[in-house]
Length: 226
Image 1 (cartoon, rainbow, N blue to C red):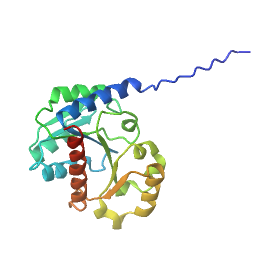
Image 2 (cartoon, rainbow, N blue to C red):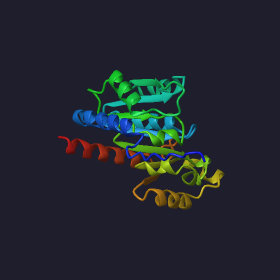
Image 3 (cartoon, rainbow, N blue to C red):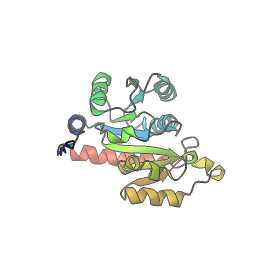
Image 4 (tube, rainbow, N blue to C red):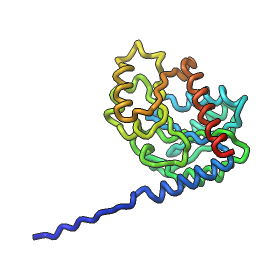
């Protein structure tokens, strides 16, 4: 009879990544830089939302932005051209995620000594990015109305690790069968502390609420480490 061995691993397979992420957060805490990781599927409106958001914030805060993609620099160029802030395109070698080491290397290359807020536009994917702590202070995900209200059931980890869920493209609600209450219930069952904000990155509807939340969260960070 063939022998079957069972090995119990007590240490998380992500422990090395988590340690690097904690180191990044401590470094950013010392510099009082608020780091926000933004995740979503492709086509949800991340770049459009970030461009509008940065333009709403840049008169009051020094903003930095980094984009993750497999090859192109289209998103980074779009943000730079529409906002005027310095951007960096991170090519992740064809992977479906960016981990804490990649993020730390990119931050070191980018330089954050003159920043108040740093945004990371993560790669478009509802699976892998949720598995890796990047060192961000807060995780934000975007779900667009055309994607459907059942996505929390299909991608539970993504909705579980986010502080804020932005429901984008609410200007299209009449054209799609999207039940906001059903969606909210799904998210809250996974993550009772998640804040859900309906927005339209195209029209700007709901964006002020998100700006206020970001400002409040950054204030908490700076007060804590002052």
